[in-house]
Length: 301
Image (cartoon, rainbow, N blue to C red; front, side, top):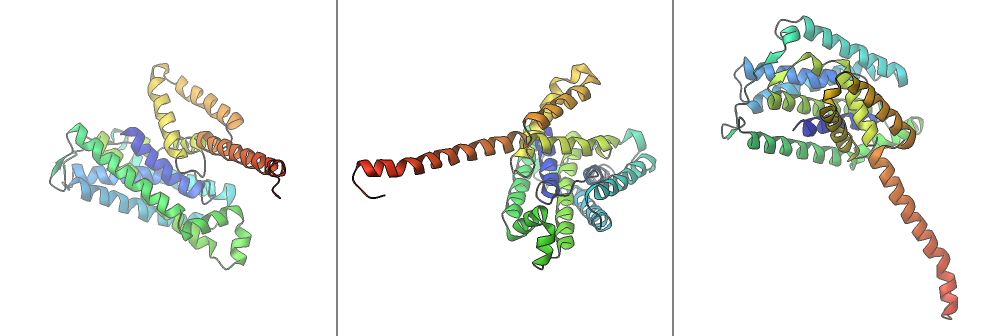
């Protein structure tokens, strides 16, 4: 369930970074905001899980639209730094605010009954619900990427000046992509609060933004399955290497460096490139051999 939640978070981040070309360092703000609002609604508001999740997603979407409106005016490193600064504001607000309970976070969040029917206290039930939410999120991203909007977003990533010359309002497209990414990040954060029954400062901390960037890079930027594979790798590493304590960060750094050096397009990106090159070589070999075989059979090529 942790892999599914973080994979959905990575898919959301890949939407702006992989397809929009926007390097953001503040996605933990949306993930954490949804986590806190969902937990608060369920634990103290007494709302059912579906409404609590809806409130959390709405909060993340509004925050994403606001942050995007402020940051989208800049590009490159300036954009990244603005998103980081805004995310840190959210972090310090969560640290100081009374309703977030500071360093203690919101604990013992009740899972409740989904639509009054499905008891989420049952482990198998909550797993199937988490899987269903992830698949719906994946299908949503797939549809966006393969839509005219997604194709336009890719063109902006490749050559923004040319997209502007063709009449596209690139700022509007990037803002919409950023907002949709915040929405999906909110779904992931809200589900995380329900699954693990806690919302903590770690959800809005900078390392969460760094982790989702790491997942996307390891899996493959601009690929659909890359963020999912990257999330699985990072979570498995964190779980298996937990006994090493603080050395986990060092080991993750080494693995990240090796991926940058030898798998520059990530696991899925490198695999797709290898398959494409292999097909190209086979096609080239078939094209070269075709005239010779035709001459032997006496048929004009």
